[in-house]
Every structure is written in structure tokens, then in C-alpha cells.
Length: 369
Image 1: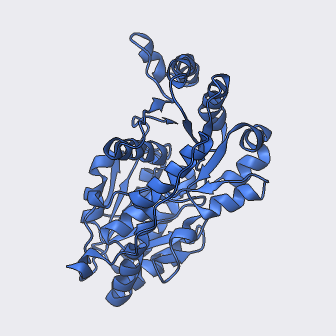
Image 2: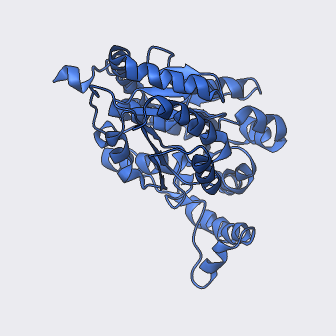
Image 3: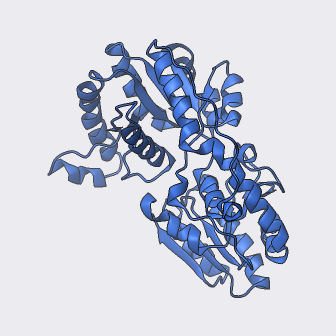
């Protein structure tokens, strides 16, 4: 699996590590991670602190690593996103894999896929003619690729429910959480404005922002300008610790302008948090409005706040949403992902594979108890 290391905390690195651990326990696939961001030996590692130089140094380490590692594998599973990262991360892996005549699965995750594919002839050519299969985590993204005459298979992101503790919040408290990185596409500014409206009615309300990013300083300034109280910026949090923040919160909210299939929403489902989100990209494919959560228009802080307040005022609504959301998680657990990946791996390797039957839909652990 060619992917960012956990030094770059994000959906790709978390998913890859989770897959590696699952395959190790399962025994049916011997999976190793080849990082797209290898660290050079001292003293050259100091060059990683310099913008632009960092990219050159990383590439000088990355290409030789690909040549050393990919010659020994049966299938190359390359994670990919949009923008310049497509050229710097998966494309070298595809080139080296093809030099060794290895089959390649391109695992494409990007809420900005439509814009990327419209602009990038290279990405379109690679997906149509070079890789052996393209796998995406959502039906939404599959349809985007299909509009560019690129066929893709859906294998959902996987979540380990053992990492989270499901519980109902009764009564629901105004303790709000967002675990998206502080980058423009996640529009955390809208979230701060919404929180200002919530705090006007619930002065003791709290907001915890888990993650780092280029807008960290600007968002702290905005929070101060809005005279918000009880806003906590945690910075980046290791994946093994993220469950603690869900456990301490009562409502999960996010306001992305662009999105695909946010793992954070599934983590909130697994923790029993009702979710309020903007209705963008692939979010409605995993969260049905007023069935599994609440959806509002993009960049609409007033509606975002109103829906949070509606949950706080209507415990029965929150309870119903949480129950429904938890039942959807069967599709994202390891047995379903395992079958999808084994089928994809064996197909590109020219092997036959008979998938298992799917497990029945689960009930919430609270009901089971």
C-alpha cells in the first residue's frame, strides 16, 4: 500500500494502517506500507523544514524506495487524492509498478474529484488506460468518475467499532465536537459562526476542534473576534486517542464545502453522537437527512446552529437519529471491506475469488444490552 505515513494524520494514512492491521490479523493478505513521505537520514532530514526543498528531497528518497519495494509484491495498492499530490504520490508508484509489470489498484479519495478530473488529462489517462482497477469509497465518487468515462468499484472506508464506545446522551448537553483538519475546504469558519449562535442561547456551550492545518492561526483570531467562550483547539491528535474526544462530546457537527466520505461522521455514529453537517459531496450518501442525522446547505451557519438547537430541544429526535445511524455501520465494518478488497486484489492478480455472504444489519449495543 503506497500511502502517506501516520506523520501526516489524515483519512488515507488512518485507513491504510487499519487495513494493514486487519490483514495481519486475518492472514489472507501480506500487506506492507510504502510511505510517500520517507524521511531522509541525518543531516538531510533537516531539509524537510524548508518549503519546496522538502518536496525535492522527499521525491529523491521516494523514487528509490519504490524501486526497492514494489519489485517484490503481487499487487500495488496506491492511495490517491486530487491536485498536485496526484502527480507526486500515486503517479510515481504507478510508473514504477508498471515497469515491474505489477498490477495496480488506484484507491481514489477526493471530494474535489470533479474539478480535478476536468483539469487533469494525466489523471484521466492514468485511470482510463494505465491502472488495472480504480477503487473509490463511495457511490457518490463512483458516479463522478463515471461522468468522465472512468469505471470504478466501491469499497467503503472501514471503521473498527471496538475503538469507540456507543452510548445515548440523556439529556443532550451543548458540548459540540468537530474533528476535521483546519483547512479551507472544511470551512471551520462557518462552524465558528454557527457556534456563536448556539452560545447566544446556551452560554455554557462548548466547542472542541480536533485537528491542525493552515488556517489554525486565522481561526483562533476569528474565535476571539466573535467573543466565543469555551472553544478548545486541540491541534492534531493521534488516531489511537481520537475516541476520547467523541466520548466527551454530545453533538458532532461539521461544515465542509467539499467532501467525499468523511470517516469522522462514521466515528460519530459509532460513538452515539447525533451529527449535523452541510449537505455536500458524498455526505448525503452516508447520512440521510432526518433519518441518520441532519443536513443543511453549504456555508449556512444559521441553519447549522438551528439544527444543533433542535437536537438540544428534542431528545427523542436525537435518540432516533443515533439509533438509525448506528445501524448503517454494518456496511463499513471489516467483513464488508475485507470481501471488497479481496475481490479487487484477486481480480487484478488474475485469480478467482468467491465473496462471502453479507452479515445481517446490527442493532445498537444499547438495544442488545
